[in-house]
Image 1 (cartoon, rainbow, N blue to C red):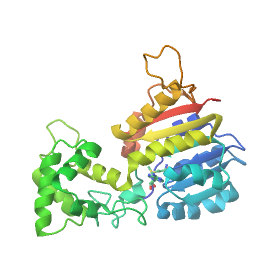
Image 2: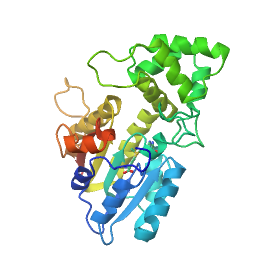
Image 3: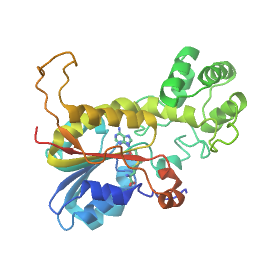
Image 4: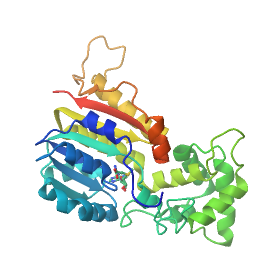
Length: 315
Ligand SMILES: C[S@@+](CC[C@H](N)C(=O)[O-])C[C@H]1O[C@@H](n2cnc3c(N)ncnc32)[C@H](O)[C@@H]1O
């Protein structure tokens, strides 16, 4: 798919958020606006939505597509969801009824040959959601030493051949810098074994591309602060819904939900709670939901999705 972005588990997202008329909702990862559009439709005639995206192109695209239809019900800001604690209240969304995070990248970004997100799309290795901030992926490949690259591919890609790939990168860049997605994919294909027999067909560079993207955008740190900020903005009864696409993200969401559900942070040997922290979340679905077979066939990008949802308690 090169055009458009099908929102993942859209029905489940709407049923979890249950956006009522007159409610205030935040879409922290606007992308192509597919979920945002459904949230606004479900909260007809006067629900309002604040949409955030780090990528200015996403904001411009959604403004053109949905702005005329929803008018003042839709507010858009180019911002990292790390800044939600400031951006939400400043936009009039200081106490909200729902907040959605649909993590990772959109089909628009994957298909953009100027940004280097896609192994098959190719292009200069940038990978920043916000091209105005931070360091492009090619710069990381040029500046980190072999040990640092190995650690990065292991930590964010769980790549079994991290050391071998890192050494090959350091070797190759002595001759010429690795500037494009095609160059990096070809190098990894040369040094890392292909898929194991019987395993799903994934390109051998998939995990390294994921690792670079996570590092370039500091995605895991952003997720931790974004979730904490969103919870602070939720009214009692408000819902927090998160769609994640790999185990590193999902682990952070799961632990955050569990910690906020527990409240108390006293060590187990303390007989009576002294921290005084009350639970702030109730889980709406225990282990999270995954998409059905029909959705995965229609939208392969949904394959690895996991949806977690929780409700803000009065504490
Ligand atoms: C999977 S897409 C969202 C798709 C969207 N739900 C839809 O229906 O079209 C994820 C979007 O989140 C944005 N994004 C990722 N991390 C972000 C962050 N920390 N802050 C703001 N936006 C972020 C990306 O730029 C991308 O456009």
